[in-house]
Amino acid sequence: MSEHAAAAGILPIEVEKLIVRYGERTILRSIDFDVRPGEIMVVMGGSGSGKSTLMRHLLALERPSSGTIRILGKDISRLDTVEQAELYRSVGVAFQSGALFSSMSVGENIMLPLTEHTKLDHQTMEIMMRMKLEVVDLAGFENLMPAELSGGMIKRAALARAIVMDPKILFCDEPSAGLDPVVAAQLDDLLLRLRGAMNMAMVVVTHELDSAFKIADRITILDRGEVLKVGTVDEIRSSTNGRIQNILNRRSEEETLDVDSYLKRLTGIEVEVAPPL
Image 1 (cartoon, helix red, strand yellow):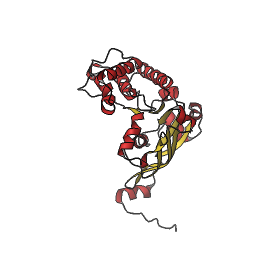
Image 2: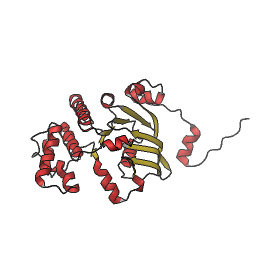
Image 3: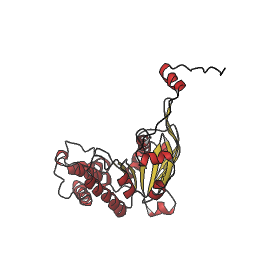
Image 4: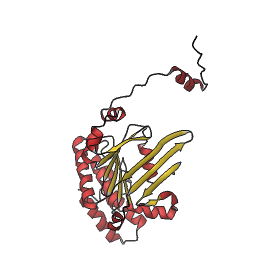
């Protein structure tokens, strides 16, 4: 973010009392969440915890039931379509699968945001593309097709595309998923280098504990649509919260079967409990 914004105390991301409902189901429950300038915030949680839903709302792909999301100081619910599009030019996204277009070369994929959102001449766009390939250690690979890349190379190419417009915020969805430990560690190092070189705020969604503990400045633990804790790596590791320890140690939570609740779920009928004799 700019020096002026930092001096004004504007955070890259601020979320206050975010509630998301789909019909009668509440997915996110009064989420409070922020990301500081130049910080890597890792978001963790089990399947169904609300990570993907939170990401979609941070990217303005869906509107919340209530609450406020501010990106670079702007309440996104108060922006029209054109204003939102302008704001999100300062945001980069690296998808879990890479999401490269198979019919386009690596270089064309990386230049896509420039061709869609700028009026730069082609030569300038090619220079910017090659600079970003240098940053992610893929110099000289611009003429290859995505099918010719390894899994780790696809992830790095996706990162190059996400940062080609020098965003102030970078979102990464499961950057290490499907990679062997050595390649995953290299990608972690790349994220740390990018943060240092570009002074971006990052939101990284991951379930990989080694990666999270290596790159995070702070970690947000989500569970059942709630924020269990936000803290540093040491604070998360030392937490005495049983649900957090279950997530960190991959322990399942055994629930005692409530017969009345079970019958109600099956029949849709409230079960009347007879008074004791």
